[in-house]
Length: 299
Ligand SMILES: [Zn+2]
Ligand SMILES: [Zn+2]
Image (cartoon, rainbow, N blue to C red; front, top):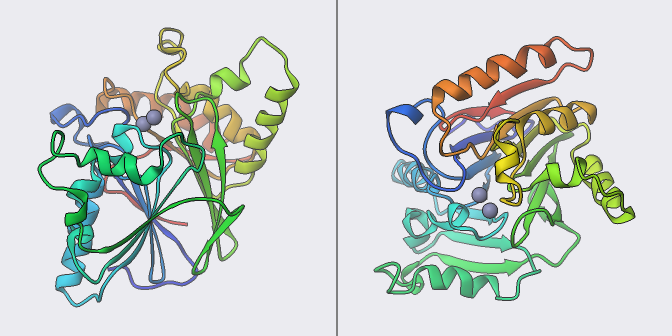
C-alpha cells in the first residue's frame, strides 16, 4: 500500500483499452484490459468503471487484506454499462468477501434499473455464478444528488449525450486538486458540428467548464484523425480534437484513454511522439500522455 499522503490522490490505471480486451505481444506496453481506474486518497478507495482491468485491482486489494488491511470500503462509479465497463465485476475478488463494502453508482437516466442490468450480466446463460454469491455488503445506487461527497472527495457529475445509450463524466476534487474522468463520448459531434444550435452551445460550454483547469483529465481518445470519418456515430472522440479542447481549457495533464483495440503499442508510441512535444513546450504547458495499464500517478 502507498504511504498515506493526505495531500495527494493516487490514480492507477488498471485497464485502458476501449471496446474489447486485447491481450497479446502488440499491447504489452499500454495494456489490453478494458476500462478501470482507481483513485486512492488516504483510506478512501474509488474505482472508476469495472472493465476487465478491475480483476487485477481486486487481486491487489486481496493481497493487501492478506497482509493485514482490514475490510475494504469501496466505491465503484460507473460511466455506463457497456460491456467494456462492467465485464470485470464478476471477477472482482473483494466483492465475494464478507465484511467488505461495495457501493456502486451509476446514471439515473436508464430505462432499466442499474441493479437489474448488473444482475442480468450474471444470469446463468452468461455466467456460472449468480450475483447473490457476492458476499460483500453491496449497495447499488442511481445518483440523484447534484454532488456526491465520499470522505474527503467531492464528486461532480454530468450526463454525456454523445454516446449511444449515454454515459456519465465525473470530476473528483480533494485538497485543492481535480481529476476528471470523461470517457466514451463523441466530442467531434459536438465541437465539429456544422449545424449551429443553442442546445449544442450549452452542451459545449458545460463540457468546457467541467474540465477547465483540471490537474488530470482522463479522456476518450480512441481514433486517429484519419480513422474518425469511418467511425462517426460509434460514440468516441478523435485524438487531435480532445488535445486541442483540453489545451484551450488549461488542463495540466491529459491522459488519452480508451485506446482503440486495433492500435498496437507501436502506433500509440508514434501518436505520443507526434502530439506531445508541441504541448509540452507551448505557453500553457500541458503534459499529454497515453494511459498505460499499471501506471500510478500522484495528483
Ligand atoms: Zn467503452
Ligand atoms: Zn460505451
